Image (cartoon, rainbow, N blue to C red; front, side):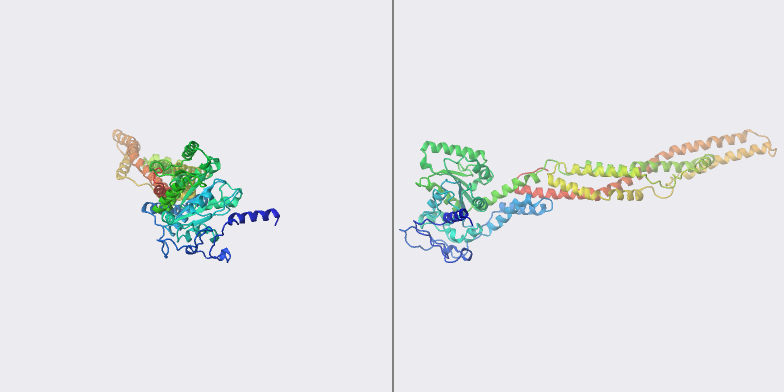
Length: 598
């Protein structure tokens, strides 16, 4: 180890040790190493001056049993339960870093609730040279924390408890037994500050990184904070930007003290206090003036004791009401809610409208060719009607023309590869559109979850739609015939029979078998020749309505099949993600106490 490193280590040790020219504090268990000391409040050594009497018995009113645990009121318990439910529902959707602060608040709230509710832990924090250690000693009535010109002076947090039963609270702060003290015995102080646990922190602007880490760690665990500023550095940007502004929501458990007023005239003190209040207001810190909840702002001199009684009275009120711990937890929950707002607060109209669902189903139906299938069914019905009700000669001619052509009327024609690719692209476009509509107003993490659910559901959707198209398409065989078709067929057969009878009659007359009489056979033939096309035309007109209904029914079946497939594979998973978001948003509303959109 180098000489410079040895000197730095010795300086840190000296910073936490008592000065040589004052009596040493007797700490129970000093004869053993720190890690073997089992510290108990009833055995805390009392640091006294040379003229003081020996240690006295514990203050009256203390009990030998364990202190009662902290109790949260109903609203705070409800908010903590909502935050716990929120974190649990969001684990699979948000990363651990986003939920880290909320999880820490839950852990610390649970840990604090198990500890003493009769004690209030207050930290004294300040910058180098602000006089916070001197104020700590003044409140304790005895020099506990080292003061001096050398900077930094305080190297580690030091605890001072005004009553027994705070051992577990100080253990939670990680303060070893050798840095735990009791104040000077005073009946007035014991009565006024009984239940107070005061922590002297290292300088928050210390050049030593470890000192700043101590400050940041302990500030998250204490019930209240006394910020000590001096006339020279009360407007320090590091203090306001790093600590005061982020802790603006903790104003009710915050006391801001302007120290070293003995160096200022009265008018200068008032001017600095006014400017300090202005800066705190700009930081967003509510000031507890005119009996309103907020931070207290005091001016004092730890050196002369001027104004210390006001601080002691303020601390006495905080300790007596025993509500600082719960207010600190409530403020932590508020801060966690503010940090989580970007991932839970959304705009209006979150979710899928009925119009968006219908548009999605329509796009799938178009991709699967529902309209074309309906038109094909209508043409098939009309073709069947023409075959059944057409003249025999026309049907024979059509048979002759269709004999060498493709059998499009009876065999299904497979779609070409480019048509299948186009249909697949339409399905993918429909899924993208509906996922974008569902995620439009959602915060980024939940919007991503909705899109991922839609993409997972779209896998294999095109193949499923093809199968449904085959199942829900035209039924095998000929289309069903209405009741009037047999009558039309009989009438068409009669027209054909008239033509045959009239023609045979004429042939018989030409052959001399029958007596000449052109009127009757010609009339019969004309009736058959004209009546056959008229019957076919009439049947065609009558078949339009049933054919249209048949085509519409085929299109409806295919559209319903496509919509059912799309709903099961895409819309339902998307709706499940939206429902999950609504649940966590409802929990967030309980935490924040405000609405976050519908």
